[in-house]
Image (cartoon, rainbow, N blue to C red; front, side):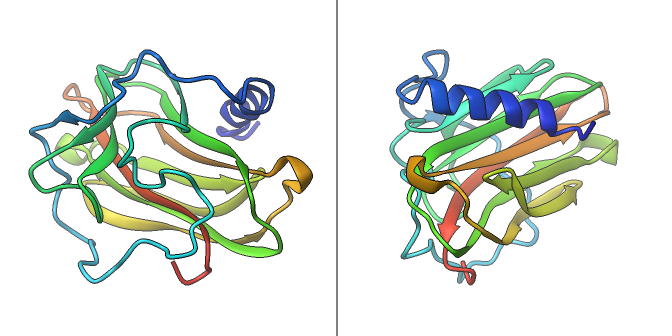
Length: 202
């Protein structure tokens, strides 16, 4: 069984059966975070997609309408801001896992108006103390993989591609799934920002 199959199935079930659910355990507004993503592959000239079909793609309005799901131990997760900001705005989704074994984070959004061939993906950064293990990031649209990357201690990195939207009348569903199977005793961190469904050039 693929590592991402169960989280995606659970996410799809929740998003389609409980479209109005909100993650009450997460902060409704961005909290200050002293830790910023490591420098690296960031593209300072990149802009948000002008034709993005997602609502709140950069978490500037908090967590809604995103639905997060996790497995394993997470010491911190939610929408945050830091002195350096996110990929292109002030906010981002941040998770810090204090687990040295399997952990998964999936954030998703449903009811997306998309049709035909579309681009889909996210900007992700990762920190792996001691360079132990890797952060496996995969973005899905309607169960199809838009892109996959294995990150170490890495600055903002584009993870995405293009697929044929298959959501139909109910709309499409996007999911950003982050997985780690091992880490140092210090755990590991991930930043997610500027998720998109739109132009293939985003």
